[in-house]
Image (cartoon, protein in one colour):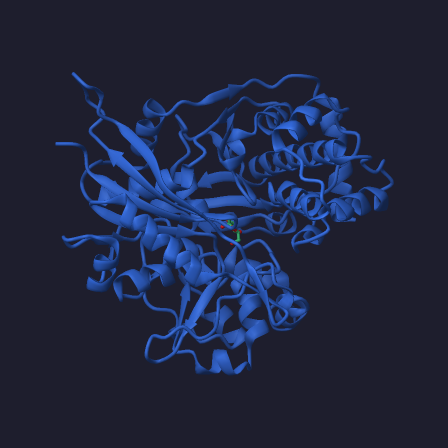
Length: 496
Ligand code: LFR
């Protein structure tokens, strides 16, 4: 019989995917290695909708995509759901959704940092949560929503993957890795932080009980089975429901001394640790301690990522200049290196629209040459990302005291050879690129372990990845001085 199949629902900021993973024993037989294989059965766009001045997720459109994907997937041993972090839906007492979930890039959180800081000064908030300040963390969204009729009527708050799982199964839980991005969790106890919730007047009973990746999370409801053509009961398993948590499971590292960069709309660059690093230096460096699968900590920094590039393309397209990405990258590879670089952690890049103009502004504000065309803009973005990767990998080592010998680039950016090579050059370290579907793989592997199809810890799961997947290797080239100088200049910009 063929190895069991697991359906990974992986919702990203620009597209959703349902991916089927078959996980065998890794033994070699007459038909080749019975290892790990992935098939993308369904991909659908994730297009936010601006309505009444607020940027929303099209949550029902996403749910339809999930159902379509589960139908196309056919028979599966289980289902797991992961998505981007921090956002949520509110339910009333009957379980009905109250309003459409708001996008973390919406401007409603503007000005809430000050309100939160007035009761929890940043050093205190960091000492309790270990979380990087991002203006859209759930605590700021809930502060923005405070006093609204909708929050007043809410009986339950479900993070996005938990909301999808709830619709699939009728059972509610709060998966831990994603809960850790709310800034309401203490990464030392891996449980809710009452001091934070109490200080901000946030009702923790809105959250259903915590679930740990690998735990059962219900079964597809009869109506869902009917809609997706499943005749047998199908369990849903809690996975690292924060896409970054699953992506880090999907890093094919050989030992413990690696850094990872999970690339997509964001670049999440850092280390996997056993315990959080909660120091004032870490706070100042804007490093986060998110919770990972199997008791790990994701010690990383959020970097703007390919969002910069996606938004540039969207702007050019709306101006009637649709560029082929391949052409832009070919040009960028030939363009002058490090002509100008921007701080890819700068919150000024979070909101959508006018990205080329905002990049030009950032160059002008810092006394650097302004990119003269699309190709130069793309080169500026990629140099800036590579530099931000370097700074994050370097800072993570310094702040945690853990050295690394290689950098793994996983996620959508692993396709981008220029970005991977520039990252190797900037870091002065070898880069291992791939897999691009790391989040789906991490999702599948955790399900497969719960089902008993694979065994062991993260190292064992990664061993399976390494033997099954084609990976690309980039050796660092070129002198380090130019990158070092640029890194110092951007640090000065970031701190200044
Ligand atoms: C990546 C990601 C990041 C999180 C951001 C917003 O998809 O989940 O880890 O900081 O989206 O939720």
